[in-house]
Length: 221
Image (cartoon, rainbow, N blue to C red; front, side, top):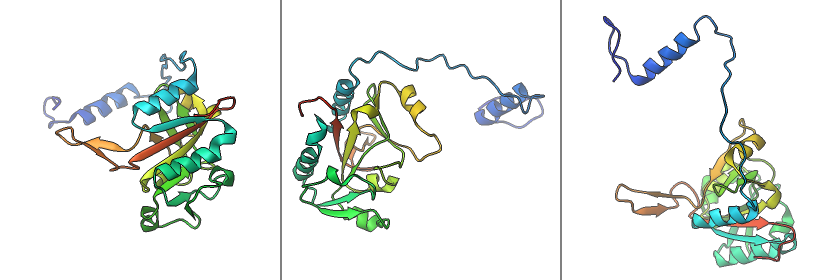
């Protein structure tokens, strides 16, 4: 606990920090403070598609790099492998993505209830941006992504990541995003651990993450 001035009661660290901020800004309440941003905004990550796929795999997610013409077949195969019988999708997801998939489709329009979402085996979405350096996928509720609950309740999340959506670093991703939108950052399947480090999956989201990177010119995956 911080030491208070003589005659004053004890203060906590938060109060002391805020007091210092107010003192530093005294007399300049409307002044803009220039914040130095000297950290690297970009890095030479080489082949971002290859690096992203490698980092996603490190998180125990299943990842494949496929050509655009192979996407529908890859989606169908992954849904079959994951035993997804009931699939939830955003209302604006391209229909060709799941063409040929042997599933019962549930479109999130009108919005599915939590119980209905819990009854879905999986969900299929796109993404806003992906980060090669960290293997992270970011959803912002934009086209083909749906609302946040859609990707947090079903047990399997199949996410389509266009190669053009992959950037090298976190600052590059942030520059593409609108901070006012509801952002969901995904680094592998949902997992946590207790005090004895026993891994528990599926607590905060899907236990299984399947990532299909769509890269023109690739031979498949």
